[in-house]
Length: 389
Ligand SMILES: Cc1cc2nc3c(=O)[nH]c(=O)nc-3n(C[C@H](O)[C@H](O)[C@H](O)COP(=O)(O)OP(=O)(O)OC[C@H]3O[C@@H](n4cnc5c(N)ncnc54)[C@H](O)[C@@H]3O)c2cc1C
Image: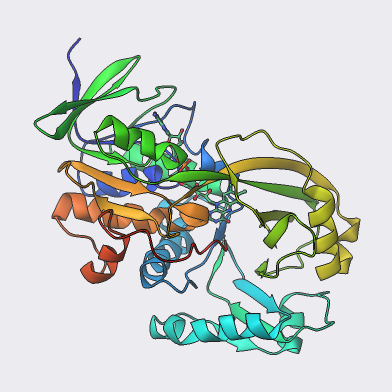
């Protein structure tokens, strides 16, 4: 059978792959996006709780997420589709002196990058987060331009818009092999076909290392498990997504974060104290009693909510907690959009936009020097993973 020829083949139709397909198709490229699941966004994308913020401390993450916010917040006008965009910002309520210093120390760099974020006093936080426990509350940060989006609605909409521009999507096709020729990728092979292209993008999320290995090199993307849940809907009362960065007094939870989605449900997630390494996505309920106590102690009025569903997903982690974006080392026609850690949904559109520019125009849309901070060739040994969502 003759291999089908494309300009770009993307492996993975998730948080990164779907916006990348859209922006590449917009650049006039003939695109194929392949996924092992039956539709877009069914990998880690649908595990995300949909928090989107530019208020990081890393210049590259700030720049990428500013672009993502621009894309998400204008998407209804761009595509005419609701993706559940809810402005309302992120709020980090702070209860300890040490955490206050951490948050205040980040403000100068965040301001330098033009982010709308400030330290506000306890009464200001109580206004933003009605019903919050005031005992020991020192104040906190609020960044009103951040927000929330539905990950499944977003990946579906990126897919639909990419298709309108001529991109093709093939589902239920796990990529089994890369055909290599003279040190470049020549083709992608699945059980149902062989697809050739000039350029290939690895956007395979938690499975990214395996795809790199098919091309003869290695990248350290190490999945770890996180669990999340959602309640029944209630009347809207909580504009921001709230992040409690205190470790729990329990043995299990580090920070936790939650917000009320556009349709009224409270959606929540936590970071385990000890990373749960591996790819096991079977959900447990062991964190529920602990997290429920933490949620209710932070906002007592949440005690009447009913939890409807729990799930488990993976953070595709890197050793330094920073994504890996750019040209693959030693394989000229392969680009990487991998290692998104706990922030891949919010980074997806910004990564896709810059990768499309890098592929189509030879350079990213963002400042090259900042883009290089994400380079696959950087030293990933140093630095501490930024594991807040
Ligand atoms: C509980 C939880 C909450 C989270 N909350 C947030 C949040 O609020 N905000 C945020 O920004 N991030 C959040 N994240 C992180 C976010 O979900 C991930 O960082 C992001 O989805 C990773 O995007 P990706 O495109 O790299 O991977 P994915 O979205 O998983 O896409 C990769 C795709 O590649 C496909 N694939 C892999 N291997 C192959 C193969 N061999 N052949 C074919 N297809 C293949 C997969 O099927 C998958 O669809 C959360 C994660 C979890 C688990």
